[in-house]
Image (cartoon, rainbow, N blue to C red):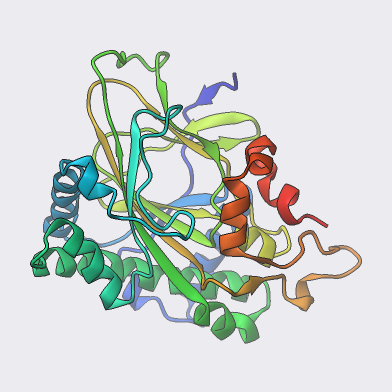
Length: 320
């Protein structure tokens, strides 16, 4: 098994992200940091401003949701892959997750809330909006910065117009049978890459996220005032391999439950992702055929997807 190293991923300050303006010295220096972090690690820790009452409220309500009966949670169902409840998985007994699809659609948020509170829950909906709005703003900033680094300012609007967000609550159950010893961890979620463009991950104060770099697992500690931002396979394909989509996993040690909140930035279902022609030439031949995100998700859940090496799933699906 690959070893685990205590190496910090890059940390970038976005505490006053609303003051970041294109064509300013701060913007220019920050966009280089973002691009270099995603090239080398495929991720970074973003320090940003989120009021304690919002963050605490999110994890309080997350804990409350997972305490509902299974029959209630199973109502979070969708025919679309990765758009509903995930749990009761034999090889991942500690893992369960709930999804709000199409987050920016108010009806989607209300539909999710009505599963647990049939008469509605305005506090819950307002809390989700207050928590997710700064991340949606950061998503736009990062996409603008990445596009500018690649000399693709003319593609920024195209990239932003296909935005579609999934919001997930995830619960990893601790157990008295799991030692808190660092050398005696158990798998919460196996090694995988994300298929979307960017993933934003926050957690309660229980660590467990690991990133694989050069065959070694790096423990990622997420502070209360930060989230981890990961590049996914969609960005790897769109940049024709210039950004790294990192293999990552979750391990659990000890009795404490781990609660994680993720915002997934992906393309609208039906849109085909392909590298702009400016990024394809003799030195950089096309690496991936155009693909649609839901079909990639379906492939990942198929026998062929399970058989593919996790770090090469995109190549196995649509590599040239």
